[in-house]
Image 1: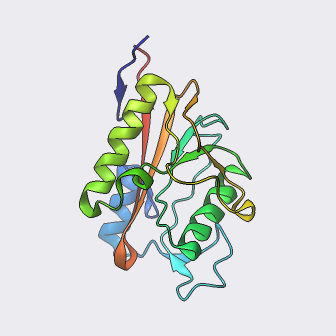
Image 2: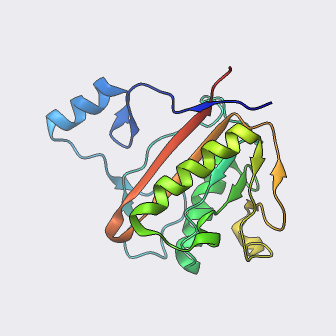
Length: 179
C-alpha cells in the first residue's frame, strides 16, 4: 500500500518557542533563545552555548520505532556530539538512525533537501534505508544505526537534522498522512 507523506504543523518549533505567537514575541522583544547546552555533556567542546529547542518526544507522539535522519558529518567529535544529543532525547538505541549522505557525499546546500526527500520516501514505503559503507557506529555512541540492509518499519514520523559550517543547525519533523 502506498501512502502519501505530507509536511505537517502550523507555526514553528524553535529554541525561541513553540508556535507562532511565542516565537514572534521572542523576536519582537529582542530576547535571545540561546543558553548553556543541556541535552548532552558539551564540556569537551569550545562552544557550550546553543539554541536548544525543548522537545518531549512522547508528547509529540514519537515512539522508539520512529525514524531519524542523522547529519553524519563523518568527523568523530561532531558525530559523537550528535549521538549524545540523540541518546539524551530518545534514550540509548531509542530510534533507528540512518545517514543518506554516506552514499552521496556532502552536497552542501543540496544535502538538506535530499534528506527530506529520502525521509518522505521512507514514510511512503515504510522502509529505513541503510547507512552505506559502515559496519556500525562506535558502541559508545549508543545509537541504533541502520546499516547493512534496509529495515522495514511502520513509520509515522521522521526527524531530519542538518548541520552546516559556522553554527548552522536545523531540524524538521515530517509526518505521514492517514490517507
